[in-house]
Length: 497
Image 1 (cartoon, rainbow, N blue to C red):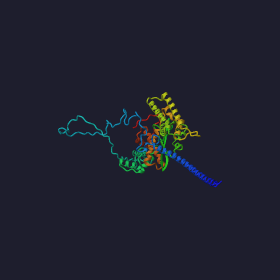
Image 2: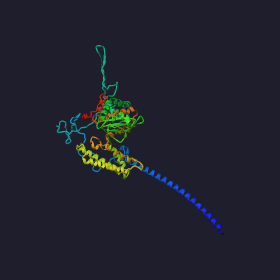
Image 3: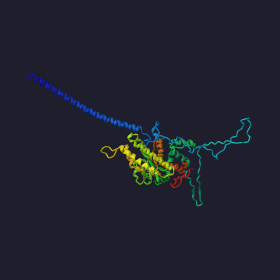
Image 4: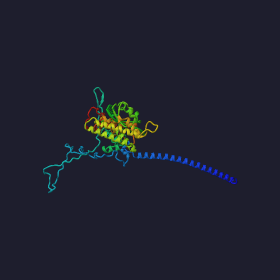
């Protein structure tokens, strides 16, 4: 028992050491838990940053081929919106296409004869020498443009009964001194069709006609003309509302410093513009076209168009192709989008070829191929974008696109079964393109009244242009108080004067 105190002391030392080890273990366990928490947090941050990098890369890759943006917004380093396909036609004039050149006329306004005075050989006088031939050259040029002043004198005559009667002035003579319909037509043309700012339009007309024109006059002329052409614009709206096929679109604009929307309704021969503070249905209805339209409406996937249940829809194929391109660029798992885009392009080429051959439908094998491949690509898209666990519907742009292609199949492929229906909505987009140019030049309209007047004049001029009418001629008619009216849809268009 002599060594019992030593054992007790050793046991105490072991107990103290064990307690110290347990304390170390607890501290290390706490540190490990902290490291695990930090690791989980860092992992979440890495995943978030990876997603942000992917999103930024996707945004950097956006262009007019995969997004509804104009090519002009891409900058000087932009790539072609539609890569040239092998075998496609070359740039420039195509073989067999009619050319345009300046040709001599048989009825010149003036003939100037140039006779040689001396012989180039011996130097003899050729004044009485006989003429053995001539070479003709014609110079086409503008005459000097100056204002032509016409004074109208309204006589006052007294009748035998004593009543004095004054003759009426013509519509253009509205003041002691005023500009006539020709100058006013030029002002409206430069303002609403060529998009010149007021100051530049005043300077240009001053240089052309040799007389200064006040900017106030420039600004007032468009409003005056808009009032005159109101019946023509109403007729345009009526004809579009009754058309079997029409295009609809909208674009942003600034009016009185606030955001507004310019809505367009168009056919091959008509164009109607309307400005409103609202983009959706409440902004579309006041134009008076969509609530009455019962034909096939070509438009993009903007939801308010679907609220017009009385009409049939054709979703814009160009918008769908851009969306499909954007999804296909997300990775190999979304290859179905590339295949679907290729299918839509091929079907559109089939339709154009059939139209060129005066056929009114696709061949049976083409329709069978279209239906089978369309269903197959939809199935691939659904498989590539399944719903998350516990959810009934998948989320994200690819899933939304494949669902749209599945549920709106008839509205997407209508162009393939009805050749009167367009593949895309480019007609409306072309009409709206100049609205964006106007916004870039002027920054917007100062007043809603000015914007409404511009839209009326744009409707009048764009429709006249589509119907091959001389723009300055129809504007002169308007300022003479007899605006040109669009031809009825059943009447063939007259050749431009």
